[in-house]
Image (cartoon, rainbow, N blue to C red; front, side, top):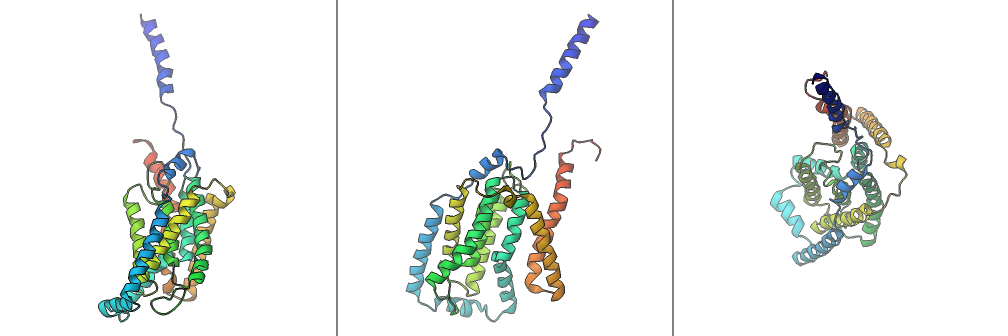
Amino acid sequence: METRRQQVSDTAGPCTEQAAPPERSVSPVDGGAAADVAARAHWVPLWFGPALLLASGGVYLLEQVLGEDWLHDAIEVGLGVSGNAGVRLVLAAVASLGDGYLAAVVVAAVLVWSRSANRRQTILLAVLAASAVAPVIKALIDRTRPYGGGHSWPSGHVTTVCTLALPLVGASRRGEGTLVGASRGRDAALLAIVLAVGAARVLGLHHWPSDVVGGAGLAAVMVALLQRLPPVLPPALTSRRLGEVTLWSVFAFELWRMGQDWPGRECVLTTAVLAFVLMAMLVGPAARSLAASPAGAPR
């Protein structure tokens, strides 16, 4: 009887061990099918961009009814922005979130962290497309800005920040590597950044409201089309190593630039963002390793 129990125990042991397969570590940038499927669930609808462009046209017609001076009167007289140096500084800082220079930092960070090959390709091509297409449209339309300059429609800052934000919608969902945690709050933060940049450009009298809506529409059209594009870029152009090299190179340049003209107010924001991203890049893997280790295991 004892021998039979021993045989049952010996037989059950291996079966029990085989029932729980070993966990497979997944690289945050493996470009697996699961991450691409998760990203596809949050693609920008094809109708969204054209709808925003039509809305921009509607806002433009309303602006023509109100006249040329309504925005200047509302901001300068009603809010007194021009007479407040602090407000102007804040508006300039917020608007810099849509600068192409900072966009390079965000793209590099996505190359480092995102698991989705589609998302990495989309955000890289979208930023390049925005940099090439928006200036051409600006020159062709050549609309006068509220303060009197030209090349107003569409807003280049809003186009850039939207090409960064739209591909990242849903990136904090389960199964996708992210810059910052997993929550719907990050999607709301992306929307808040887009609205803040648009408001800063309008309040600073650099753009009409229709320019801002048009920039968002142009970005949505480009992102929606690029998300549906098959893989066309060599893996080296969307690799983690390229993102890391870009981040460290830009960080070194920013430190040098700040040293040349301290306090370098115009580059403080970029340097702060870079410092946060690089710290997350260094600390993130160790934190994930500690969180994944079983309770009671030596750390």
